[in-house]
Length: 166
Image (cartoon, rainbow, N blue to C red):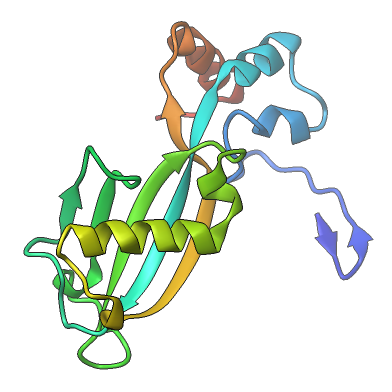
């Protein structure tokens, strides 16, 4: 724990962590067993890039979510359909979700990624260029677990040794 520039160590019986489960054993002290560390390293994740677009319309989609198989993004969410208060009035926010690894071009170039998503939405007939007021990119490195062969045993080892109940 770092508080006001001073490192402090606390002991406890339980804690809640938002650290990805594959990285958690690396930061624990005392170090957990080698079996736990090795099992945790076997757990892999896909990253997520979220492209948020402020749109000058109350809604764009006829539903809250739409899924796509032939676009750079997998799913798009229209927050205007979810009773979210959006400013300025009369606007909505679209959020496009792109699964990719952190070394992918979608991850590394925000302006190109925004342009790619908006261009696909224009071609799909969902938006006109003048309706897009702003675009922002947000990234999550550990978005989706990858269910590779053997992940079940690795996950079971991690959950059991860390006493995590799912």
